[in-house]
Image 1 (cartoon, helix red, strand yellow):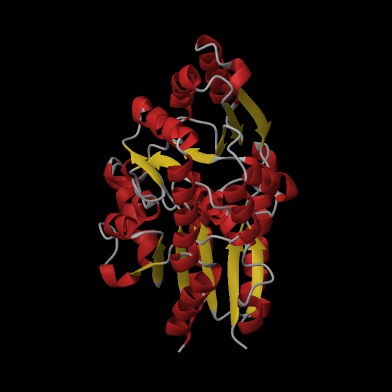
Image 2: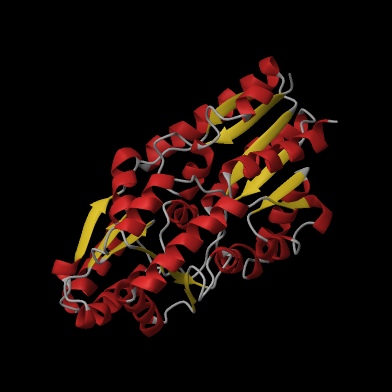
Length: 357
């Protein structure tokens, strides 16, 4: 049996990358390959992150020397994640192990287009050592083709887990006017626009509730809550913090609409998760989102920052039962047809096979 070493995060890390990786544990991958997981990152303070990183490098060195994997699959992003993964990529290349770099990044302009010549040179050098690059959408393949040749890039989109009974319950009950956001509370996810959206929706639906699940920097959370106070919508917003497991399942079941007003994205796991529960989506036309959210089919895909359009979409869904149920069914049908976990794993294994022949 071929051995694959996957560079992952601590299982308690918050965010979309962790959500993607969590599905691999106990999956078909572990039946078809001997999977060896090396954790390289955890949430926490600088010292905790540094220690986790060093232990990850040492663990990986041991795996290369003793377990001798046939392939290395790295999950990375832009920003600090790029730099943290450089030692893994170089160590693998020293041992002549093919590397798959599974990129979950979002802000390509900041990472590459607006980077210095020195940084661009480093990015080219690092990515050139990877046998294959996984992009989350065709749009991201186009971006990454500015760094590496097209034939080095494989598009493997994220996946959704289908929750059939949640869709059935949603179609049988009335809306309770609950809007759900899941993700990092910050500017990139459009959270600074949410208070104005709440105010607009509240004018038509006074008891609307926006459930903002996630965490951000102290500065961002403070600023968002201050904007909520200024808009006089404190009673319409709740902050449960980061949710997972049963709590996340319950919130997704109770919500009526999923709202993600991001300014840049890859292929958000949060939207795919919500669609697996049959939630209509209100989001933006960035990254891979237009492939999974279509205006007039399963939600609204608007320009980032368009508060009026976000509010109008939410109001229409909450006041038109026919449209609401149509979009709910279409959300579920779309991920069932195109974004199943089994299809995702099939594509991952096909890529493994191509490199291990």
